[in-house]
Image 1 (tube, chains in turn brown, orange):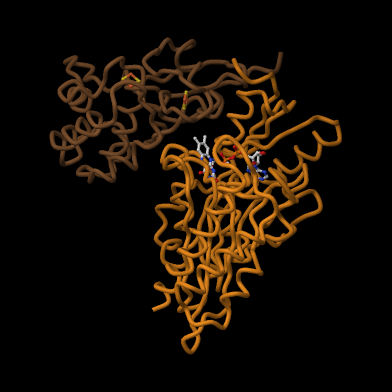
Image 2 (tube, rainbow over the protein chains, first blue to last red):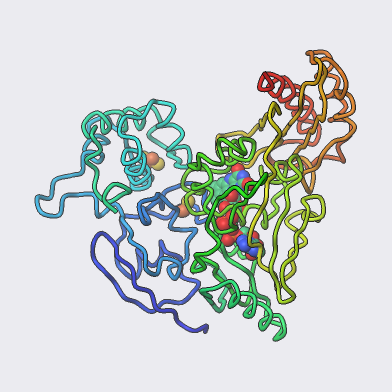
Length: 170
Length: 291
Ligand SMILES: Cc1cc2nc3c(=O)[nH]c(=O)nc-3n(C[C@H](O)[C@H](O)[C@H](O)COP(=O)(O)OP(=O)(O)OC[C@H]3O[C@@H](n4cnc5c(N)ncnc54)[C@H](O)[C@@H]3O)c2cc1C
Ligand code: FES
Ligand code: FES
């Protein structure tokens, strides 16, 4: 057993302090230690994008980070999208519902978080820019056309960049 | 937990990191540096790498910069590839390195992966390998005996292997600014955007009195390390630009390759024919940029 490492990390506005095994991945930390199971695990080697979260304003793979590497960072996961007070879904989530951007929903948390970064950086992306931002997320059942439509709708509904928690407000 | 157990250290200065690497080496501990983790973490998760200890460079803030020093662009090893992609200095003064950066993986990988990590990892399909050879870049490493500057052609030794010693840290990469009127091109072919390339090419050249001069052709993704192909460069040097001569250079490039890698993504023959096409297209694109 290797020495446990101390981690202090803020996730969706709440600060957690934990001692972790250094080999614990960030996605397992989120799911098993913090019980935030909205972030999904697919391939665990960086290819599928299901585990995408926002770290200090940028979309990253939580399967390719150790929990210890998140020490001192500010994270946002899919659980942080919904308005905590009203319970209302985030405009990106609502757009994925309205445009049928998901079927089984396994890939969806990753697509939502990649979209969150995209629209924070670029409130009115072209179709090519949408494709470039999402080329690291795989969907095995919906098909990409309705996902792109969902992002287009989300952009239209949020133009002006009123998106919480990424570059703009971090 | 997928990786095998390891000890974890997060030194806060370069000096601490080098001292730690030396101590672990003396104690016979198999230690590995982790930078962005975007290549190492998959290898740990698949247990292709099972180090006894990880030395995380993430807390060393002095290795994160992109600046111009005289005729050279210097990049700190811990600079993220996203920062390189967003750098207007890099885009304006070292456009070949900038263009190659945009081809590396996906946005989410470039956000976390470092520039230094891509050089140090030395994947045969890494875009930076070809850029390093084409530009004649230099790598700066710091170890217990101080600093060493390694030219690109001595830096890459083989598949995933560089000249960096187990007790050394890559601290900076240096890319000379191309002379005015240099044309350049960077192209690759992958199955899906963001994948590691099956083959790719970087070209620089100048036009002098209507003829191609100082032609540099470097290829990656086909052999254990990226390499320049003087056989193909010679075909074009001194010649007027044109489709026929570029096609001939492409054929010469394909013929000059060592037996290419064959894997699930592409056969050796297919990689050879990709190089012929990419060299031809890159030469034409580079000439257009000379104007
Ligand atoms: C889905 C996916 C797609 C990708 N596509 C591409 C692609 O198209 N092209 C491409 O080039 N790469 C690609 N990569 C790899 C990616 O670019 C990595 O970020 C990069 O190769 C390593 O950088 P890192 O900072 O993450 O290094 P790490 O993964 O932390 O380290 C990689 C290796 O380099 C060593 N190392 C790192 N930094 C230093 C240093 N400063 N001094 C000494 N040794 C060091 C480590 O010990 C380790 O052996 C891809 C990765 C994924 C997951
Ligand atoms: S689970 Fe992280 S990219 Fe697939
Ligand atoms: S909705 Fe099923 S994998 Fe994307």
